[in-house]
Length: 133
Image (cartoon, rainbow, N blue to C red):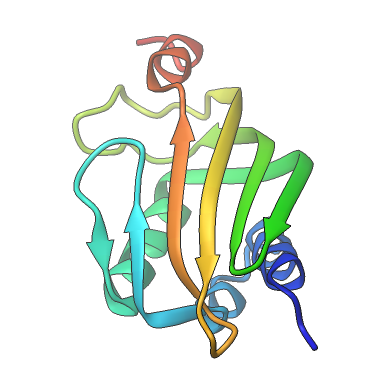
């Protein structure tokens, strides 16, 4: 039997591999995606759009990953090692700046073994300082 921890571990392995198709395969059709800034997204299509946008603007690799799981819920703590590739709306101009941020996420997995909630937190003001805002 695949556990919540296994599913979340596979999700973040796909993230680090830049394999958005594998990430999408692990999320539910009705996934709820709550981001640090902005409105939540509901549904796999909007989550796919978000991933395409992130791929255009950022290249990120997560390190120092620690995953806690109990039942259908999980929490992950990690370091985001990134490069700002393309200017994101309302943010400073991208010139290839690199950054390193502490971040965390809360996730839940449904009875079908798909991630149905992802909530991510990081320090935006720290990121802005690192990219020269």
